[in-house]
Amino acid sequence: MKKLPLVLLLGAGLSLNSHAQSFGDFLKNAAADAARQAVAGNVRQAVSSAVDSAARGVTQPGRPGAPVPEAATQAAPAPVAAVPAKPAFPPGCVRMKGTPLAIGERPASYQPETLWPDTGCPVYNYSDLKFEKATAAKHAFVEASKVRCNDCEGGYWPDAWGWRGLVKDSRGGNYGDEFAKMLVALKQGESLTWKGNQYDGTVTATGAHPIGELPCRQFHYVLSEKGKPLAEYDSLLCEYAGPYASKATWHEKV
Image (cartoon, rainbow, N blue to C red; front, side, top):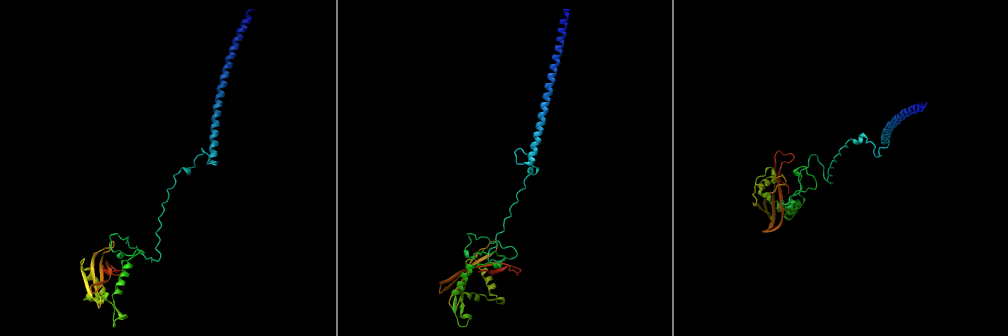
């Protein structure tokens, strides 16, 4: 009978060891399950947070971390270059068809200044070149040369026109064209002279002075009385074809 308690104790010990081992395994399994559930819960929470953040980015695109819309990721279009505005047409000038002549500014070496064409308005033909100051000086020269006469129109005759007596053969009475040929035949420094009713006239070639690509020559006129100069002006002839001409000829511009 004394062996029974020992056997019972041994059985109980075995049973306790068995239960303890089983309980320990249970705890390990429970801890592993809890860890797996915790990890799964974190993953679900992370996924849920990412979904919520993306949804907020769509509804609130300005929030930090919001996804950039596809249109915003595309390159911005290059700015369109501004087209320069055409310069305003000068007031008081006549607009014509075609391209204006490229006269440009007077070079500092070009003298005298009065024989450079006026550039206030666009010019489309060489025949339209204007020289206002030089033309005024020529008009004053002619006025200063007027001599009273009894048998002439207006009662005065300008001795400045005495150069007409130098033209021996004028076709059709066009003294200007024939005299222009005589002038351009002069070498630089050479002169033509004439005697008027009261005053004497002299014109001297001062050389070739082109205006851009336009061939031009300058001349200097002097009106004198008994060798004393009374008036003078600078003249200009240029070579070009007129609007209805087939070839270039010399034209008196001043």
